[in-house]
Length: 210
Image: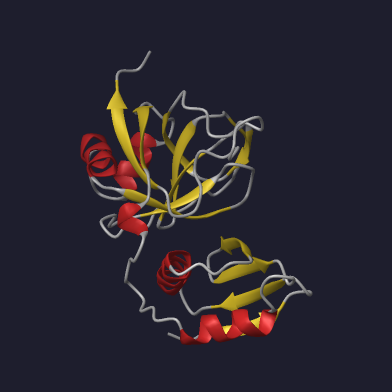
């Protein structure tokens, strides 16, 4: 696994990886061996930002820790032990039928696959509380909409590329909508405010449309 270490101010170190699989494996390994003074691990599609308290651990020590830690792409150290949440979904999204047709499956088969597998929050971004979900058991690459919607409702369950996601609030978006949930994804008064945080395991449960 390649790791490129880049300084990011005097309180953080940015780690560049070659793939999301490498990010997930390294994030799990770092989280399992977290050192005193590490304030936050922030994964993204190809990077991990390590935020530290330099009064407790200097960046030089963090760099040594990252270089020496063992992690191989595809490995999961802490993922299996992460909390699992279930999100109820009414699968009546505007794009469900068209997405199934693009993938050459029936809508029922697409819903069955979406609910049968376990997802993981790889990283968060785009909007507060929006988690990019991945699964080793998800076989589809879903094209984005040719023209993004100007308004996607909060709770919309969606697909794009190899990712799943749930819109935490109303916003524009180009993902394909397959369902909706009433589960609150973002609560600024909660701790943490986001329901979907990196590493969290997720399952979707089909419910009747109300």
